[in-house]
Each structure stands twice: as structure tokens, then as C-alpha cells.
Image 1 (cartoon, rainbow, N blue to C red):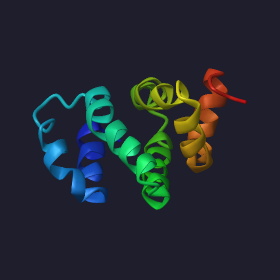
Image 2: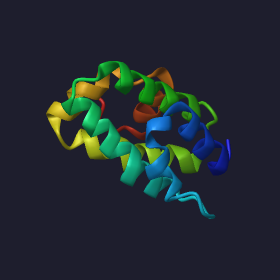
Image 3: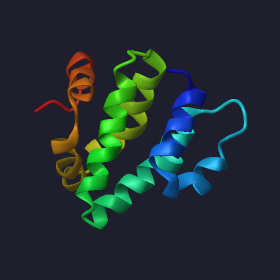
Amino acid sequence: MENKAIFQSLIEMFPNLKHELNEYEDEPILMHLVFGDVINPYIEHCIYSHDFAEIRRIFQFIDFILSEQDIYIQEVILFTVLERFADDDNKWNCIKPFLGPNTLKLLTIRGRFCD
């Protein structure tokens, strides 16, 4: 899945983030920035507001895009998203139950954060 398609899917799945996402619409779309500047703060907001249904939706989307086995997207998710939350046990424990099979596989292959 190309960055543009991922970006469009993000807007479709999370229309409440359209305004923030539109700031990154110009080419080239840098997924590290999109996830780091928009999706991560949204995940944190969901953690603080105990919106576990939305956390589940976010990580279902992440697991879906990881199913494409794109190395760049794997690095974005691993280093931009997962590492950020792995540094804080409370946040990690909030998201960990929602990590899908592709996300867990990525963590296992990379040997990171697995306990």
C-alpha cells in the first residue's frame, strides 16, 4: 500500500483528524511525520480519555497496513509509534491488548518490547 493510499485511508477511517492530516497532504507524504505528529497524539488522547474502542480501531488499522509487509511502514510503526509508547509502562499497558497479529509478529521479528 502506497503512502498516499495509507494517508487517504487514515482520513476515511478517522475523519475527526482530517484537519490535522491535511497539513501533511502535500507530496511527499512522510509517514513518520503523519504518525508522529498526528496519530501518536491521538492515541495518547484516547488513552487519557479511556476511549479503548478507538484505540482498538487505530491498532486494527495499523495491523491492516502492516499486512502489506512494506519495510518502510514497518519501520514507521516500530520506531515512530511503538517505541514511543513502549517507553512508558502505563501507556504501553493500555495499548498492548490491542496489538494485532501483524503488529505482534513485527515485534517478535525485530525482537523488541516482547515480554
